Length: 206
Image (cartoon, rainbow, N blue to C red):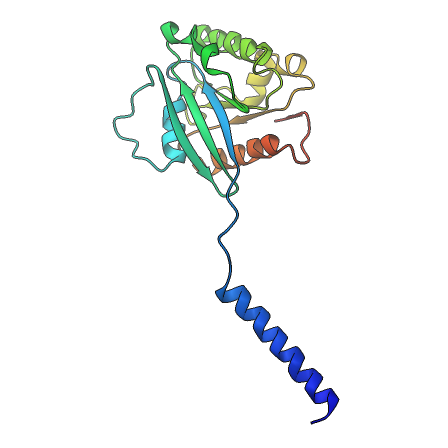
Protein backbone atom coordinates (compact mmCIF):
# COMPACT_ATOMS: atom_id res chain seq x y z
CA UNK A 1 0.00 0.00 0.00
CA UNK A 2 1.39 3.40 -0.96
CA UNK A 3 2.30 5.99 1.67
CA UNK A 4 -0.35 8.30 0.18
CA UNK A 5 -3.03 5.66 0.66
CA UNK A 6 -1.89 4.93 4.22
CA UNK A 7 -1.99 8.62 5.08
CA UNK A 8 -5.51 8.94 3.64
CA UNK A 9 -6.75 5.97 5.65
CA UNK A 10 -5.17 7.34 8.82
CA UNK A 11 -6.88 10.70 8.32
CA UNK A 12 -10.21 8.93 7.75
CA UNK A 13 -9.78 6.97 10.99
CA UNK A 14 -9.01 10.18 12.90
CA UNK A 15 -12.08 11.87 11.40
CA UNK A 16 -14.35 8.92 12.26
CA UNK A 17 -12.97 8.77 15.81
CA UNK A 18 -13.52 12.51 16.29
CA UNK A 19 -17.13 12.21 15.09
CA UNK A 20 -17.69 9.21 17.37
CA UNK A 21 -16.35 11.12 20.36
CA UNK A 22 -18.54 14.11 19.57
CA UNK A 23 -21.70 12.01 19.18
CA UNK A 24 -21.27 9.30 21.79
CA UNK A 25 -18.85 10.59 24.39
CA UNK A 26 -20.13 14.09 24.88
CA UNK A 27 -19.85 15.13 28.50
CA UNK A 28 -22.59 16.86 30.48
CA UNK A 29 -23.29 20.47 29.54
CA UNK A 30 -21.58 23.08 31.72
CA UNK A 31 -23.74 24.26 34.61
CA UNK A 32 -25.70 27.45 34.08
CA UNK A 33 -24.59 30.36 36.25
CA UNK A 34 -26.92 31.30 39.09
CA UNK A 35 -27.67 34.83 40.26
CA UNK A 36 -29.43 35.95 43.44
CA UNK A 37 -32.01 38.60 42.61
CA UNK A 38 -34.45 40.56 44.76
CA UNK A 39 -37.87 41.41 43.30
CA UNK A 40 -39.82 44.32 44.81
CA UNK A 41 -42.87 46.43 43.99
CA UNK A 42 -46.16 47.48 45.50
CA UNK A 43 -49.02 45.05 46.10
CA UNK A 44 -50.95 44.51 42.89
CA UNK A 45 -48.00 45.29 40.61
CA UNK A 46 -48.06 41.72 39.33
CA UNK A 47 -44.77 40.36 40.66
CA UNK A 48 -46.13 36.95 41.64
CA UNK A 49 -48.05 36.48 38.38
CA UNK A 50 -45.02 37.27 36.22
CA UNK A 51 -42.74 34.94 38.20
CA UNK A 52 -45.33 32.14 38.18
CA UNK A 53 -45.66 32.39 34.41
CA UNK A 54 -41.88 32.39 33.99
CA UNK A 55 -41.75 29.18 36.04
CA UNK A 56 -44.61 27.68 33.99
CA UNK A 57 -46.72 27.35 37.12
CA UNK A 58 -50.48 27.42 37.12
CA UNK A 59 -51.92 30.92 37.22
CA UNK A 60 -55.10 29.95 39.07
CA UNK A 61 -55.60 31.21 42.61
CA UNK A 62 -52.51 33.44 42.63
CA UNK A 63 -52.50 35.55 45.78
CA UNK A 64 -50.19 38.45 46.65
CA UNK A 65 -47.05 37.55 48.55
CA UNK A 66 -47.58 38.49 52.18
CA UNK A 67 -43.99 38.08 53.37
CA UNK A 68 -41.42 36.81 50.94
CA UNK A 69 -40.97 33.83 48.67
CA UNK A 70 -38.06 32.39 46.70
CA UNK A 71 -38.28 30.94 43.21
CA UNK A 72 -35.57 29.45 41.01
CA UNK A 73 -36.49 30.88 37.60
CA UNK A 74 -34.75 28.99 34.77
CA UNK A 75 -33.52 30.59 31.56
CA UNK A 76 -31.47 29.02 28.75
CA UNK A 77 -28.23 30.68 29.87
CA UNK A 78 -28.77 31.24 33.61
CA UNK A 79 -30.88 30.52 36.66
CA UNK A 80 -32.23 33.42 38.68
CA UNK A 81 -32.87 32.74 42.34
CA UNK A 82 -35.54 35.39 42.82
CA UNK A 83 -36.44 36.55 46.31
CA UNK A 84 -39.85 38.20 45.95
CA UNK A 85 -40.80 40.61 48.73
CA UNK A 86 -44.41 41.46 49.51
CA UNK A 87 -45.48 45.01 48.70
CA UNK A 88 -47.94 45.73 51.52
CA UNK A 89 -47.27 48.74 53.74
CA UNK A 90 -46.51 46.56 56.76
CA UNK A 91 -43.93 44.58 54.72
CA UNK A 92 -42.17 47.36 52.79
CA UNK A 93 -40.43 48.69 55.89
CA UNK A 94 -38.60 45.36 56.17
CA UNK A 95 -37.46 45.15 52.53
CA UNK A 96 -33.91 46.26 53.29
CA UNK A 97 -33.40 43.29 55.61
CA UNK A 98 -33.52 41.02 52.57
CA UNK A 99 -31.23 43.01 50.26
CA UNK A 100 -27.95 41.50 51.46
CA UNK A 101 -26.34 39.17 48.95
CA UNK A 102 -28.43 40.37 46.02
CA UNK A 103 -26.72 40.60 42.63
CA UNK A 104 -29.54 42.37 40.82
CA UNK A 105 -32.95 43.99 41.32
CA UNK A 106 -36.26 43.46 39.55
CA UNK A 107 -38.69 46.30 40.26
CA UNK A 108 -42.27 45.74 39.07
CA UNK A 109 -44.79 48.58 38.92
CA UNK A 110 -48.41 48.75 37.83
CA UNK A 111 -48.39 51.05 34.82
CA UNK A 112 -52.19 51.30 34.95
CA UNK A 113 -52.46 52.23 38.63
CA UNK A 114 -53.86 55.41 40.11
CA UNK A 115 -51.73 58.55 40.24
CA UNK A 116 -51.41 58.08 44.01
CA UNK A 117 -50.12 54.51 43.71
CA UNK A 118 -47.83 55.46 40.86
CA UNK A 119 -46.31 58.18 43.03
CA UNK A 120 -45.80 55.61 45.81
CA UNK A 121 -44.08 53.26 43.34
CA UNK A 122 -41.90 56.14 42.16
CA UNK A 123 -40.78 56.86 45.73
CA UNK A 124 -39.98 53.19 46.36
CA UNK A 125 -37.96 52.90 43.15
CA UNK A 126 -36.02 56.05 44.00
CA UNK A 127 -35.26 54.61 47.44
CA UNK A 128 -34.09 51.32 45.94
CA UNK A 129 -31.87 53.00 43.34
CA UNK A 130 -30.16 54.98 46.10
CA UNK A 131 -29.96 52.25 48.75
CA UNK A 132 -26.33 51.46 49.68
CA UNK A 133 -26.81 47.71 49.13
CA UNK A 134 -28.54 48.11 45.75
CA UNK A 135 -27.22 51.28 44.14
CA UNK A 136 -24.39 49.52 42.27
CA UNK A 137 -26.52 46.58 41.07
CA UNK A 138 -28.24 46.18 37.69
CA UNK A 139 -31.97 46.95 37.68
CA UNK A 140 -34.76 45.52 35.54
CA UNK A 141 -37.75 47.85 35.83
CA UNK A 142 -40.98 46.38 34.46
CA UNK A 143 -43.91 48.68 33.69
CA UNK A 144 -46.44 45.89 34.09
CA UNK A 145 -50.08 45.53 32.99
CA UNK A 146 -49.42 47.01 29.57
CA UNK A 147 -52.52 45.13 28.38
CA UNK A 148 -54.80 47.45 30.37
CA UNK A 149 -56.33 50.50 28.64
CA UNK A 150 -55.05 52.94 31.28
CA UNK A 151 -51.45 51.71 31.10
CA UNK A 152 -48.72 54.34 30.76
CA UNK A 153 -46.05 53.60 28.19
CA UNK A 154 -42.47 52.90 29.28
CA UNK A 155 -41.46 56.32 27.94
CA UNK A 156 -44.14 58.00 30.06
CA UNK A 157 -42.93 56.03 33.09
CA UNK A 158 -39.32 56.99 32.40
CA UNK A 159 -40.23 60.67 32.26
CA UNK A 160 -42.53 60.63 35.30
CA UNK A 161 -40.06 58.62 37.40
CA UNK A 162 -37.18 60.92 36.32
CA UNK A 163 -35.04 57.89 35.58
CA UNK A 164 -32.56 59.59 33.26
CA UNK A 165 -31.12 61.99 35.86
CA UNK A 166 -31.57 59.66 38.84
CA UNK A 167 -30.11 56.51 37.30
CA UNK A 168 -27.44 58.10 35.13
CA UNK A 169 -24.33 55.94 35.16
CA UNK A 170 -26.21 52.96 36.59
CA UNK A 171 -27.04 49.72 34.77
CA UNK A 172 -30.78 49.55 34.23
CA UNK A 173 -33.44 48.45 31.77
CA UNK A 174 -37.01 49.75 31.60
CA UNK A 175 -39.48 47.63 29.64
CA UNK A 176 -43.22 47.21 29.39
CA UNK A 177 -44.63 43.85 30.46
CA UNK A 178 -47.80 41.82 30.59
CA UNK A 179 -48.65 38.18 31.26
CA UNK A 180 -50.35 38.25 27.84
CA UNK A 181 -46.92 38.52 26.19
CA UNK A 182 -44.49 36.38 28.13
CA UNK A 183 -42.08 36.14 25.21
CA UNK A 184 -41.41 39.87 25.56
CA UNK A 185 -40.98 39.41 29.32
CA UNK A 186 -38.44 36.64 28.71
CA UNK A 187 -36.56 38.91 26.31
CA UNK A 188 -36.44 41.61 29.00
CA UNK A 189 -35.02 39.11 31.47
CA UNK A 190 -32.50 38.04 28.83
CA UNK A 191 -31.25 41.63 28.66
CA UNK A 192 -31.16 41.72 32.45
CA UNK A 193 -29.05 38.55 32.55
CA UNK A 194 -26.62 40.24 30.16
CA UNK A 195 -26.30 43.06 32.69
CA UNK A 196 -25.69 40.50 35.43
CA UNK A 197 -23.01 38.92 33.29
CA UNK A 198 -21.70 42.42 32.53
CA UNK A 199 -21.11 41.57 28.87
CA UNK A 200 -21.07 44.40 26.35
CA UNK A 201 -23.71 46.42 28.17
CA UNK A 202 -24.42 50.11 28.16
CA UNK A 203 -25.10 52.04 31.38
CA UNK A 204 -28.81 52.36 30.59
CA UNK A 205 -31.30 50.92 28.15
CA UNK A 206 -34.99 51.36 27.37
